[in-house]
Image (cartoon, rainbow, N blue to C red; front, side):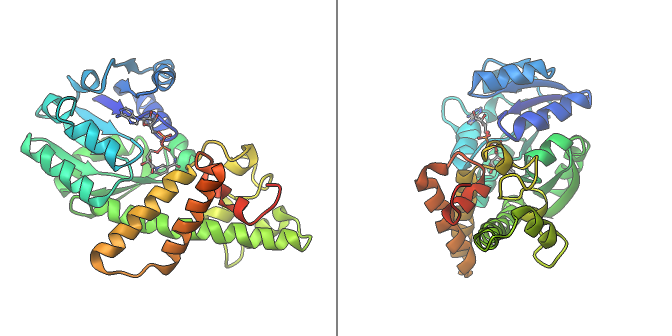
Length: 297
Ligand code: NAD
């Protein structure tokens, strides 16, 4: 049993923390939203009054925050940054999806405090977080990953070590760029079929066993009513926010520019999710991008 500080109890962090509690670990939990802390306390965690309060006697610190600026602020802020407060023996695992350069910057600062840190962004969505079947995509020292592995297996079933610090983030952005494109085109295909009078459910079932098969057809189908448990069937709530996908596609564009790579479809998809955000859907699940091409969904 480890003493774990878990910071960031949103759509992903809450179920991940719940799985650590189920595995018997002792969790001190913190989130800026009091209701998120309350829910984690009901699940068995102990409420911390601040992020610093959460980490004071931790063996492991896990963060699951929205974006680079939140992670940089959490660890490096001049007055409230966590690094000087984390016990020297502790291991730091950041599971947020952020810029590779930020991940490297925070890990280097952690090392100066004698702390081992990995970037371990995840794939698998909220359903994977709840089921404990996430994929962890890890950047950092192999020896640090081995220390983290007994904790990560409580939350996920696949663990990939893809390189040194920041590499986990690069690999995660590659995955999400492909996902963003696939989700948008799946929505387009379903809207086209429905415009011709086809049943979206039958069309999806056919595609799910044909060559357009994907996570978007099978797990997070963008058409309401096709999959009972998909965000589309509950008003596009829960799930992976449109603006988080927009953030990831922006990070992919930055990563592409830094090495001169061309990502024509990734850039196009970034614009689609930006349009969806400007249409007022930024807080909805990213599968709501289908609203750009379909009426009445
Ligand atoms: P979310 O917005 O639901 O949750 C983030 C939580 O962090 C919120 O509860 C917020 O209050 C809290 N927070 C922000 N700053 C904080 C701070 N300084 N201290 C304490 N708490 C703070 O986001 P999410 O969907 O849980 O995603 C988290 C990360 O995981 C993002 O980087 C996202 O890109 C990534 N991700 C999400 C999914 C998904 O399906 N939702 C899948 C894979 C990866």
